[in-house]
Image 1 (cartoon, helix red, strand yellow):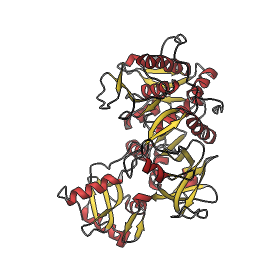
Image 2 (cartoon, helix red, strand yellow):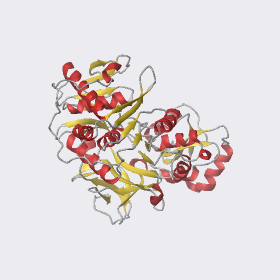
Image 3 (cartoon, one colour):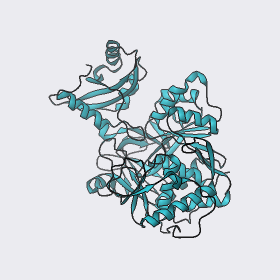
Image 4 (spheres, helix red, strand yellow):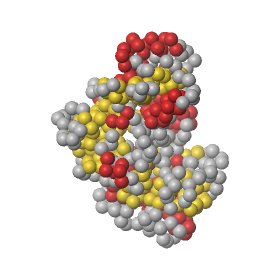
Amino acid sequence: MTNAPTTTARNFTDLLREAARRTPDAPAFHRRRWRSNTPEGVTHAGFVRTVDALSDRLIDRGIKPGQACSVDVKSHWGALAAAVAIASVGAAAAPPDDDEADWALVLAASTSSTRARRIIATPDWFQVPEAAPPPGSHARWQDASSVCAILRSSGTTGRPKRIAVTHDQMIARMARVMAAFPVPAEGRVACPMGPSGGYGFRTMVCALAGGASIVGCAGIEGTLEAIDFWRVTHLVVSPLLLEELVRARGTPAGPMRTLEVVEVGGSRLPDALRIAASRALCPNLVVSYGSSEAGVVAKGRADELAATPGAVGRLLDGIDAGSVDENDAPLPAGQVGTLRIRGPGCVDAYLGAQAATQRAFRDGWFHPGDRGCVTAGRILVIAGREREIINAGGQKIAPAAIEDALTGLPGVVEIAAFGAEDDLPVVKPWVAIVIGADFNESAFREACRDRLGPLAPAGVLVLRALPRNQNGKVVRGKLVELVRKQARGGRPTLH
């Protein structure tokens, strides 16, 4: 049984308290204790007691409604409890390195360089109190229009922007996800991305609000061990983490016995990875599309969407989206153009970034910077990032077209296509690759010519790892910078 969030809440943390009132003794968090590494379960009532105790400590240190506090706590348990506590008192939880936050909650051993006033926490702050603390100043802040979280844009094509999400926007985001793809109350959710980003945080609070529990995990081996030990039913990962888990698990091992759903979000899920993951981890894969600006706006079963190239989900109830031309005129269903989105929970501005706000938010719509369309059946299709489209002499090429053609070549572990100028300057396709021991340069060049013809990359960067953001998306702007550096006498590339 799954319980949808109430629509009368004015502080999103009240949704977690409602779950604690319904089933106070049900598990909310499974973790290993700090120092001893012994397994421990925390109930929903225990989670709320911890949040209230943290709230009192934060108010005692001087945090006030309307302020922002970054959270630099490594454990998923501590970071989640702290973010919820901050929101419950009317302040906003911010990413660990947010220099514009008023406060920074850090552990004693933290090396955070933020300029904010510090609140030094010790591990015992996050231990579950044996009993509820006496009523005090931690009473929940009841203003749905106040900011509860500061998130960041993806930053794949530029500097990440700060995004203020209010309580009512967070409640709306949670409501549509829980209505469309609920986690059963007996479910156990693992999200190795953690609660520091918008995707991981939303995943965790939705699970708690529905009465389910969260399994703390980190790293590839740690995640696989946690799935087995805690009998995880729902796994939420980025495509990059999914690929690493599949590689570590090995396809011959077969699906993991307790996993019922693997949700993949943050960037495009290649078809080859979908097939490999369904064999090695779980046959039921769900893809998710969203952003820090709008929350999750589309979801769907990966196998059902596979017949539609570029499909990233079906629009959730309440979400309106479509494509427009260069004049913002709506295009017919299924015709690729500039994507725009609107619906409950979507913000309408960036903090302190007027020019970026004017570009992304127009006439009540959010323009995420993607090229795509929505089919007549409300399937959302993404053709690529607008600023990532390679305009090679007037011919526009989606990086995914190049990546798909070269993925799976011997010795190519990872690949990302992008456009970079030569010395004329003319933009041409390039690729960055991470290679394995069996990589053969001559065979790779020949495969590029055979598979891509005139679209074969003009140059290749060989890297130890592709630059990615916290959701696993490749930051192609950094690849362009590497090409420029190479042109100034930096590391050589294959040609």
